[in-house]
Length: 399
Figure 1 (cartoon, rainbow, N blue to C red):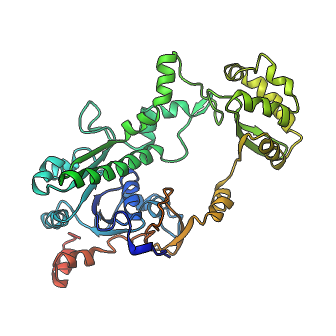
Figure 2 (figure 1 turned 180 degrees about the vertical axis):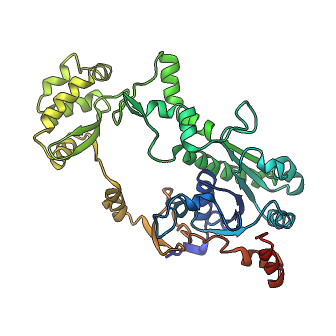
Figure 3 (figure 1 turned 180 degrees about the horizontal axis):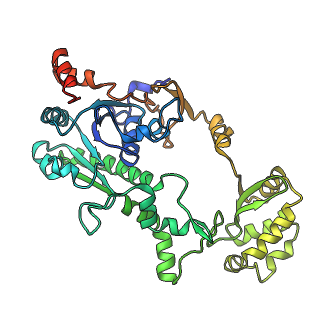
């Protein structure tokens, strides 16, 4: 179900994107473009497709990653090792605004799909290259996947409990690179509007993660030691983390001394605790976190989650429950703000969340998730291929 958009205009209507993409980072970037009206033509390998199609079968037989990342796109299968497939690709690029690729290191350049080569042929084309480490430096040829980049950028070393590091629970390195690619492409479109010329957008997963790690890099490099690995607690603020109640856990955050005084008086019923030298500043509270946690959980032992949350709200202390997956899926805030839409997939309809950026007067496209090669014939027909020509390309496994 796609809602109407006032005046029938979306920000990226008329923009054509060709994407040689797989996995997460590039598909995440191009899905944002598709949601805002761009026509995204996803090039996939005949018979196999984006390997993320095979990650799992949890969504009506489809992969959860794939249905998340690929709604609203057209799937064209091409064997890019075939000369005729290369000819088809270049016919698409001649009218395209953006090429996005996150192929293996060096693969795009070997096919003549690097920016320098393409810019001479298609002056207005924007080329966005997404890679693990970039095309220079000692790591340029190294394969990169999300968990590996989390580790290389230091995130794994900061995540988890004192005895064991852990990956972040979602593909955060891929997502960060995808978002920088998305914003970089939008910036390049604005720049092209001034100059009339396309430019290269280069995003590396490692540099995206290093940017997100910058605060802890400052803290550790200039402070002399890295933040402690403290599970779901905050390494440099206390109290800030999970605390047990009589029937579950609640997570809350105290940000300043005024809030801590309110917390002690209203929630703990002990206003003098705010003056205790062990807890009289945030630095002292972090240093004495175990003692403070013990005091808090002694109080919370007689409270339910709902009662603890009510006291925290009364004291104006930010808090949240520890939701499981279904708790998020059915969250009343998402329901109240009508964030869910329905989109089609090859296995049946699914719920899909609207993009987080809400543009007044613009309803995102929220298009269907394509089957492998679902649009090959229609795209080739647009390029002037007849039915017989297309049948021949299919029989050769070019498409």
